[in-house]
Image (cartoon, rainbow, N blue to C red; front, side):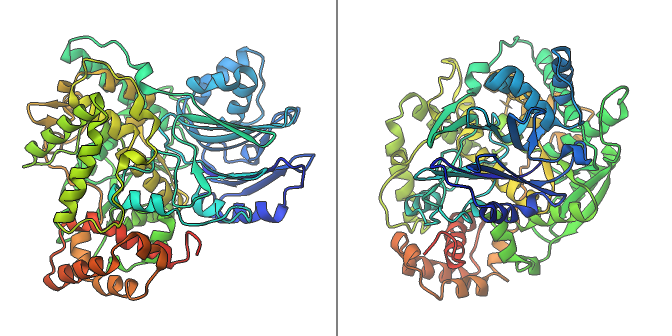
Length: 615
């Protein structure tokens, strides 16, 4: 796990060492355990790497890493969980290894199989491999986009990096605000991360499951993974579904416990995180001959919100006790709304529907206590339908039905977007000047995937949530706020074998008689407290935004809007927005809905006021 970056000049000019160093410095928070730089013999290609040492913490695991003959050079951000099995396969084919790292396994796999190695990898990654003989760069991103990879092209110059704010440091990258993307985020905050667009015009995102090849100044992007092509045949037996789901999740956790540094978990007290804690305890208790598993794993970190409606501290304590792990509480009071707010937003480096102070502080505390890896429950909601909350059954059904209609008749999306915009404006929740709708904005590749004809609306909606909107945005957020403190998040629910199996199950396995995540709740009996396993409550890992906006953040928001910004005013009816905020402030009327709809405007105003996105 780390921060990676690189620069290529296809004109033949030498890459600047100072520019590479600036790129590496901007990624330093992602890798506090070391730095490395490599420049090709012809001086036209350079890599930088900031290291977070997890597998083989010795000097042998340093990057950039070269093959013995120096033909291939790699920088890699992520983890290949099945690297031991792949290493054994490669050794039988004659490869020899000098380190115990997964990076060296990737290099050997590339030499042996080329890009045909990708389906063999079980893990998360953003990687770059340079072929010095062909003078060709290969970039790849994991199946579901867990790890980020951004790039920019200017004439014959090319740069890539793990974060937007880092790549913006490269002199030939014009860090100008993309107003079209800004509008899209304000109107549909989850609709951008699955595309190749970012808030900076010249910076593009390599989408999940895609590769890029750069040679002689030409950039070719191609898709290597499509989940719907890998669905499996499943039986009709609920008992078999439960057994298969249970076994796949256990195996996923077992692989993700491979670490040479301490491992912990972020525990909210909800079903997903409590399940992960319980399965970790199960795997640890049946270790046997398991290889390279962390010996230090008994710590859980809990964000506590005393007096707030979204506080799940009692449930988190119960889950920790059940799993036999020690809970460490990070208590957030109202004044925490101000705690390093600029730092939190800088680390987010994008726009979201809330202020991620709570998880930011959780991962900060993990690092302070020496926990470098966190196994968390991300992906379960989008995989199995966890977003229905008590009292919202009709809304849940309508959203699923609408997703099914749009999937079968894409032309219906225009009418849906128009209706949504009208509804938001009528409720005082849309202040964009543009009347353009989402169908004019680039769409994630997965929106065009061919799905089984017998799929119910719920399965279709979950497929989109997982690949196109909700989950990609959540993955981005948690990568940024965890790596801001040098902590790696591993996500057992997102093992590709578990994902393809669960997606292949009928909708009744996910929502059955009003019970969400039905298959997981049945399969995980005995792994977590019954009160949590059977609870229908869905809280979410969020800062208490209504409480903060009704109190300590009011003056901060007012001060933020005291100065005009032409780029913001060009796309937002600022006066009307300010009036709406003033009314909510005066009445202490902020709710979860108004906070989530209007915070992106506040977030974007801050982003531009900080000088981000150019001038």
